[in-house]
Image 1 (cartoon, rainbow, N blue to C red):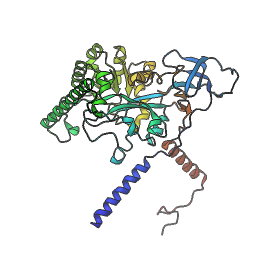
Image 2 (spheres, helix red, strand yellow):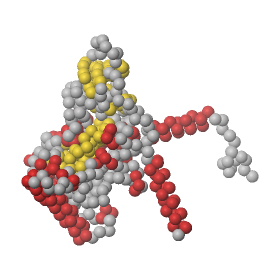
Image 3 (cartoon, rainbow, N blue to C red):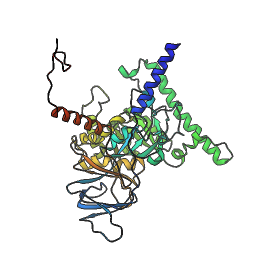
Length: 459
């Protein structure tokens, strides 16, 4: 028993240590306290033509003007003027499908909070579970990503998606939109073989598929029955699960359906349209084979990254690189994420380079930037405040020394709702630490070492 107790204690300490390592110790920025002007910059609104050598003004967290030429003061309180000569201003980038704030270290269960116990949990709002002190957040925003769609994993109906800004003391501070739409994880419709089969037979997988489809159908049937009964008699006891589905069933809110394989996409679209829902396909690896279906029903796609393997062993090696250009050329509404599942969240800072890979395979640079800014905001339902630089929108923007799609570009400053954000993070701290180490080594005279490498002569 003593040994068992010691083992449990050790595990507990390790879990606490893992949680501590996953905590960002940075101080959050205060609200914008005065007018800020960024001038002499190349401004890229995304929603309109670029403004060369212009200035952008924002106050109380909102953009008030974007004008060509230098800023001229008009009396009153003198603003803070930032000279951005030779720099570029872009709207903050948006990662459309992530587990941001719900996932820290993939191999440590204590740092994961992206899946509820139940298989049908529409009452869950992703934003409520977001950890504002996640170390992944400052690492991600240092590369210009200032907003995220958070889409938990789990059962067939795991939660409702949320949109968050990438800084805040609490989840309430971070939330842009707490209910962006219901999430549905559409089951695979053919057996998975190899490593990912998890030692399950085709029959066992088929039974799981059947149960998951049945769970989705039953949930929507029960929700409709409840809403009908509630409308007829307000005294019917409130059921928070089915109330949470009211937006999707009665109000035309988005239903984000995770579906990668062609059979999944076809089945999900057929089910959603026949039920009068407003679907968005998340993942869409085989979307190229479903172009006509997507166009016919005007269904948007959140492409789950370009740095993925084809769905089939004999598929074209560049099928995922070329998918964004194909969707753009076919007139399908789409945006880009690092992955459909969100499991790439610890590497979400690489989102611009997924877009850059699509440019190398036929997508225009302008469309690539739009796919991780305005298009993402539109599909997530937050384009009234994010995704482009326009008067009245949130002053959520970045100042860079080049195009964000270029890996050599540095994000020099970032603002979220007008607040300047600290761009230091665990990576920059480690960079400074080891630069100092080698600076000291360079300045320290070499000592004679013996064969034992200890600094003393060997015997």
